[in-house]
Length: 245
Ligand SMILES: Nc1ncnc2c1ncn2[C@@H]1O[C@H](COP(=O)(O)OP(=O)(O)OP(=O)(O)O)[C@@H](O)[C@H]1O
Ligand SMILES: [Mg+2]
Image (cartoon, rainbow, N blue to C red; front, side, top):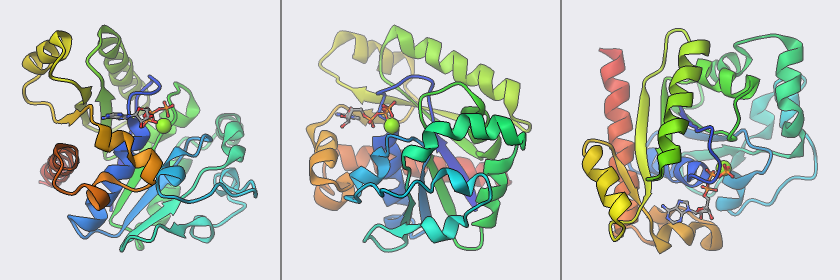
């Protein structure tokens, strides 16, 4: 089992969209039993899979060990792909984790799911707190979406520093140029600066995930966007293999 975190300290960079689409790639292209775990109280990952938010506040109780995570898991309707949804209770997750003082609670919870899933993809909130520290300790690999902007460099440096401060061993970071629009000079320059980074294009097909409430691969399988996610997923699988050897 491998845990893949999609994380940045910056909001609105495409984390949820990428996490949701990578989960589909994992389950559909790699035929892996996959769990998409939504750690953001906003609940975007569930929304993208057409699941309506639960009224019951239960997501946080998993971390307090008051609830079994498997009891909260829902099927997405896609083979091999399940979701552990967020709810409003996750607003208090940071203070709960700080209070219980178990630095590896998320990592241990993920381990308990290892018999059931081969890949766990974490959709993370844009925070620098105990939640992000736990995410970085649990992750085998950290995907950092970076839209071409001077602010992205700062976000990337902050993530690198957070990993150095909190995770031992340090998981590798896989930076991704997200929302890339080749018509823009700044974006083309960013691409030239990082020719080896995987790219997720700025695309209306990707925006449509939120209206169709489905991953791109399911409704536009031959689009450049679907190709971008598939290539990113392949790069992640390769990275995971290289970690084992
Ligand atoms: N590659 C893309 N092309 C076009 N639109 C995109 C792309 N990626 C994300 N978006 C859109 O940008 C918005 C923000 O994306 P998303 O919610 O995935 O970001 P996030 O990093 O998870 O945000 P938050 O920090 O609030 O959780 C959404 O409306 C989404 O549809
Ligand atoms: Mg999000």
